[in-house]
Image (cartoon, rainbow, N blue to C red):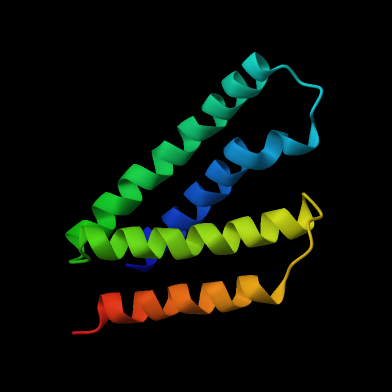
Length: 110
């Protein structure tokens, strides 16, 4: 399970860069941004697909894998938005994240 989570973490780092990394460079044409983003996303898929398979083979349901992935995505994006995009972090984001963690808790509760 840890291997799946680590792969999900790295895949989300690639995907966040692919989806949002271009926002600081507004002068780059769309076609270049799209091609570069697709190139970066290729590596995301190379990690995400094995992560999901490894997790599923370890007995984690597809619903649980998706919920784990969403939490990782929000953590990675939160760090990216604050550090790279220099966006302010508001208290309401923490509250929203806590609600999502509550959803994860109930997803895994037996």
